[in-house]
Length: 126
Image 1 (cartoon, helix red, strand yellow):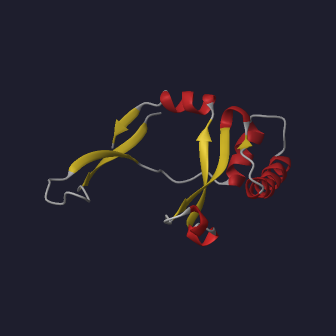
Image 2: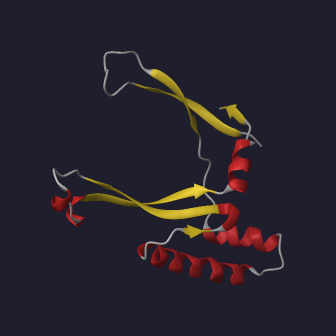
């Protein structure tokens, strides 16, 4: 099944007098919840939906602790999670503190299998 996309016109934020350029944007079609994921996995494995939900909920409790501890969380060929931050600059290293940090987020980097799967997607204009 191809991934559907639509076309969006975007102006250059720096050169606002230029005509907009058109870009392909992937269309989201709903979502797959954690419970639905557990159900799907249970349907194609010997694990029960309840067991899988327990495992996934436990993983969701452990990952933030590991990230807060400065760890990169690697989930094999699925990919890895790490913390990334954005901060305001200072004139000297001595003036940089936690107050400079504007944003903290979790960055996901897909593993080889997931990258390969995405690279094999077909696309179709909606």
